[in-house]
Length: 191
Image (cartoon, rainbow, N blue to C red; front, side, top):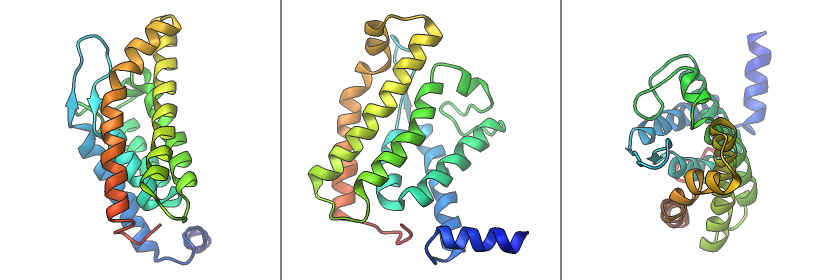
């Protein structure tokens, strides 16, 4: 059974070293946990600003979906098990049932979309920024929808609490992440 799992894992990584991929997965989970602790609470919304989306954009661009998605799943799995890896050193189901639950679900779709849009093709600054902007739109939409359902908000209130406060910061994160990706296309060579 374990031999079959090892072969499947290695085939999903297109022949790359399983150890290198595992290191990328674990490293991405650790980077997300560290980025979660860089947080700015906002008085008018229950959702803080963090650097997690910045890490998500970099991970999707540098690592690709085959490494970034398992890394994200590891991070979320650790949080679900109660590890204090979420913003404010929180963990457990409360982090997902609360105000940030929709954003977290949106991360999985965003990583997939950003990685697929960038693919292995040429990464101009514009193309990279547009792919990351699509990821941001997904995350903010999922987050605002979740807030609307959780707090019984109108669409306008949900936008004002769940998306609008994060647009300037996301624009800065996207510009910075796309510049980094353009300057250092794939420093990890495990895409």
